[in-house]
Length: 371
Image (tube, rainbow, N blue to C red; front, side):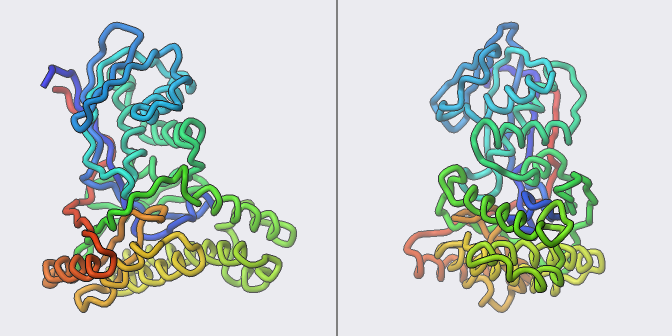
């Protein structure tokens, strides 16, 4: 491999619980994964960023004076958006050579886009001799995803990718960006991540439609409640005033209110080592995402049904935005291999193709290594 100066990584992520509430101001519970995006980088003394990949033959060159003009680039738009928003925030962007090596599967719901955006900015900061400010990097990466690539996302993915800590989950308040780190102590259980192998594309999915539905619901509820975001609405308040909402908007908002409550219960359960209750909350979360938020689909539902029916599994749900991607399951360590075999077999019988099971650990977010 060509000589580079630094190896910079940012993590993919899973979300233990708290789905589709980050953009409603809720608390979520993500964790950074050992699946990550690695950027090998060196300054090149020009005004160009040359990007190549270990998995693609393509090469892309970005002019650092025209970073706003690459939104239509098939490969390289995430890097361009990240560099542009970092530059717009007043940071120095230097010409450089970047080699990207991504082990986060694309379209898996494990936030490959966040890992690419965060690692790109961290690499640019590193060669400019700027200190790594993980929160600031996460905010610029989120801005890139929203304003450059057109996905109106919350802060969770980029924050988890940048700020994750090994063997910790984050209780992240998406309205204040305050974070409490909780130890991930699963006792006799393991976390199993399975990809249904139906890729999703958030720009083309119903993600932005869901956002607009809950924003509409919030405006209606604000006519009777003094709240700044949907996550502030309690279950009791929703029970009293939810009848102001109609049809699907009611369903979407009910999911958000109840999911916020599930996150609080999950945090309490984790602090006291009550993994059985955590498993029950995962099951309830998936049911709500399926029936109220309607973001699962037959593939994720088939995976979760196979998982939940296995005796070693105490909880399973989709993780990420849905419409494809991954599930997470809490499985007794003694039954993990049998669980993997049984779920994979049942999924193939029901869907007609294979799922993919990952061996991943909870890891650090940004890392920088001088080569």
